[in-house]
Image (cartoon, one colour):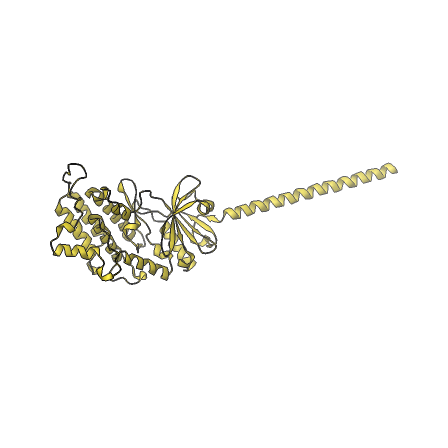
Length: 364
């Protein structure tokens, strides 16, 4: 009888142990599945896809060229400030992969538009790919309204820097022509190469970047689509203060292909003269406006004011003649001034500009 009781006790204890082990096993499995689900949800914050998937709560949209980007890369990359504006800050950022990117931080107060409108604009800008346009590789929207645009970094800087450096290369006709043709082709794609045209809205020499062999690429196109009306208007006023003043334009919402053409003309004049569009004096009546100055130079037959004196010579000790003559330079200046016509209806369209530049190039 005593043995029977002992056997029952052993069986009972063994049963409890088995049940206890099974419970522990089930608890571990549940915890593991929950952890995996949390990890998947955390990874899911970095999405790649359509507007409807994005909730603007700490998401990263990746486009062509940015497939390997992660939220961690973007938020933890050490960055150096290389530019500031009323609506954002530019950073040169070093990613963990040893690649360098340009991060554009847009202040929350500058981007208070409708979520759907912002995301549609982001998808549009992220789909643009052309050899003469800076691609958008990624877009991050944070929980506090902050936004980051990820672009390739161009080590040779902007066209404005290139012109002001006076290093000799900027005075060579072949370089001037190559840069001009690249800008025109990039703008042509924005205006005519897409199902829905994109107006740049802020085209200037600071927003043209240079790659190897002075290959020109346009940046910041369509950026005004991501800004609220007040921030976009500040952008327009900043451009006007720098000499990119389109006569008919008073509000950013009225930007057009014709206003982009005007700014293209100013850039062409910057290239051929080596001068800034405006001298920045405090008195607006005394400011130097490049298109106006060039028209006055033609009227007064001051031919030496129409282009930099080094354009007609090669850069070497013997100052050999360049393969371009003054007649070709004058055609280039006349095209630039036509782009800067006070009447928007008299400005050539981008197709006409590209054709004329090709004709000028064939003569040099």
